[in-house]
Image (cartoon, rainbow, N blue to C red; front, top):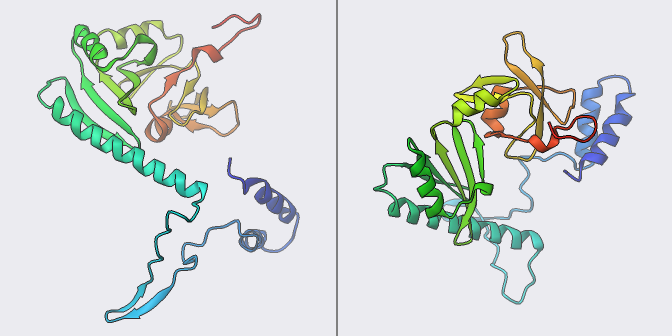
Length: 248
């Protein structure tokens, strides 16, 4: 959680009871408390005049004897992890370029994403063995099987599209089936997005689009927006319980 939120909430709550232009008062108060980011602020940038005009002064690199902050260490670690992911993606792209099942090898931050188009379940079983995936590491998302593992210490996500029988089985087993974007969702189940938030079905819009909310909060969001900005979604069966503690 953003550590500024408690102070921000306190300032807003105090000013909402005021009179006049409340919005302006709140904005200025947040700025005075350093709770707003000024995109024009230079944060101590120093300029010097050169032959071509004013140029920024590059601070000297810290020596090995100078201690670094935890944030700097985290940033360097993230850069290193992303670099390893790019190297692995390039290597895997070359290694499996001739494989007809492989439709792409890309990078998402520190994670390599391999996309496969599977029309034979035996091919999917072969890829699982090749990539070291177990059944426990694979989530069936209707028309795509999503496997998560690592390769040489680098996180690897494997997306196998159109694996036979997945879509038919999903539709048959769903208690409240809804098809969107080629995927069958069972709205009787909660769904977890890639950020870790869990969404629950809360009815439909006037156009028939399913509406969901996070952990039962009143703010609702369309299934289309959730899938676009936070997908893919994974069904969460263990969170659905009934009286007596039995799993739904």
